Length: 208
Image (tube, rainbow, N blue to C red; front, side):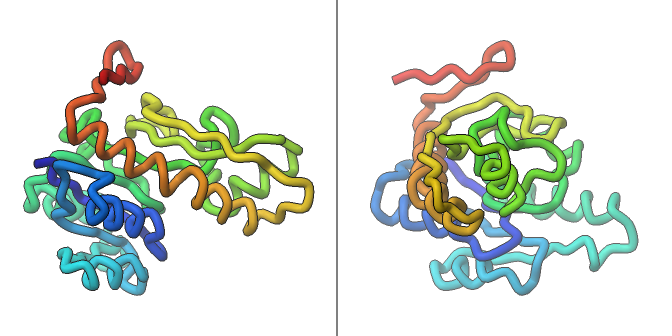
């Protein structure tokens, strides 16, 4: 059984997709051990409570410096003995010590087709604003492992979504969530839980 920690800063729509995926058995051999947010007001914490999952807030604001916050965050994750950390809209830089401990065991969802519109400064609506400014005809979402760069880790899954002429950033964001993010994040977790994903020479190998 794959034990996962889901880390999220806001509403938790991807968290809900994971909860639903486990309930619907689209995600197998998996349980959510804990949901962690840096934001005490994140609706994601309420989603976790409603599903009977431990919900924890660890905020940088509650610590005198970032190193103490980083230590507390890592300690909390380790308390739950998790196999995989899932970043589902977590707007805090992951401590390097955590990346070392959980090498190739942290995954992230990014709302573009990496390497487009990714890296420092590209998050939330900013990604979709940039895509519309560039005039791309396709955007989408990417699930990738987390390394010490920003959106640079090995790619697990991607799904393309059409960009329409009258899209606003908000409309495009919603379409990408519905047609890509909420599909490929649960699929990636299920694949990892069932031993179908490995990393060799910095690239993801998927086996049936």
